[in-house]
Length: 175
Picture 1 (cartoon, rainbow, N blue to C red):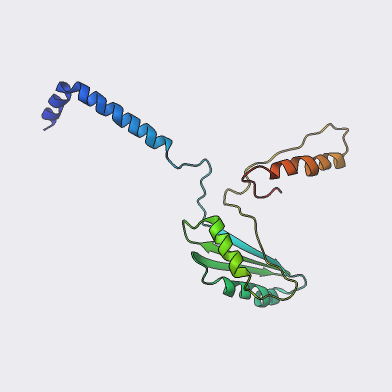
Picture 2: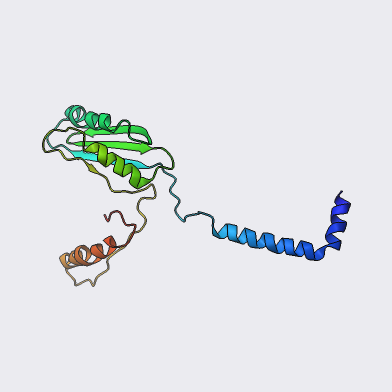
């Protein structure tokens, strides 16, 4: 059988050359269309609800804030897990969604359900910024002449650099 394949290959050189060119082109197109990212997001979709409750003890935060939010979020489409942390004056509820759930779909569903959660007057839950496991991607340093006062360097940072960085698409937060 191998002898027959070799004989056929030697007799049909043009056919094999055309086949090799077609396979090479097909392979090149396939490589160009691979969905590979420089920083792939390997983390599940998380929506984090943060509620500040000044002056409340952890037990009270758990009972009055975290549990009502957890109960209100149960049944959200695609929800896989609910976890919460209650500390003095702060409730953080983390909702983990199933794979292939879109970030913005999950956030929209949580915002809709959050409207129906009854919390004590004055407490306003907010969603944490949309970030991924990649987290901090870029650091920079503002260099200035040694004779420039630190408050002027800080003013350049706060009033010139940060507003420009916020306008860059995909920037969630600047710390």
